[in-house]
Image (cartoon, rainbow, N blue to C red; front, side, top):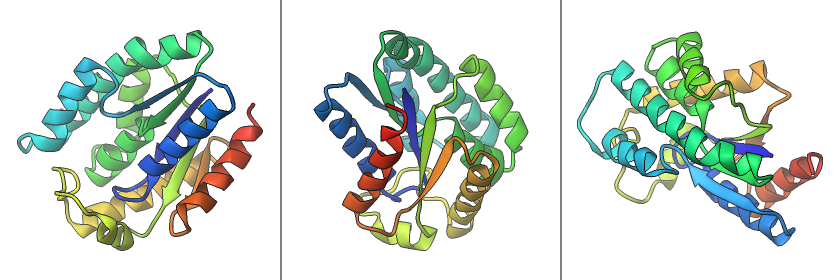
Length: 198
């Protein structure tokens, strides 16, 4: 199965992705735990450019994320699924739709179409959206923020609203989780949903 985790920066989604991958391995399953942008040499190189590089136009940013995703799907995600492995990915297409499509104003439909094209339509079986008020999420941030994380509060609120809208549009795929709860409680809820897929 292909499972992704989404949320605003510092929402706790990466922690939940790690916890699920570890739990699945404990169940005897083979898991590819990966992230976006990243997961391949090309993806990691793009990660450096988009998160730690120079300012860029919104479409350049969206195109770079899509390029990294195209390589990630073909080189890592799809082969793992074809081998019968589970894939747990920290961010995927919904991130681009929320951040670039909505918050950057490029258009939800346009960014979604680009990403469905470059991934040949590969969507997750389940997406867990860790919802946390952007102000609370920012208070959690401890390390030096990257280029996206340095965006203002209005930007992060637009991202949060976009995610909530996506969850409402795709209730069968996107599971919204209360990110204000303790991590172990959230992880237990995630496992309950995953058990329905096994």
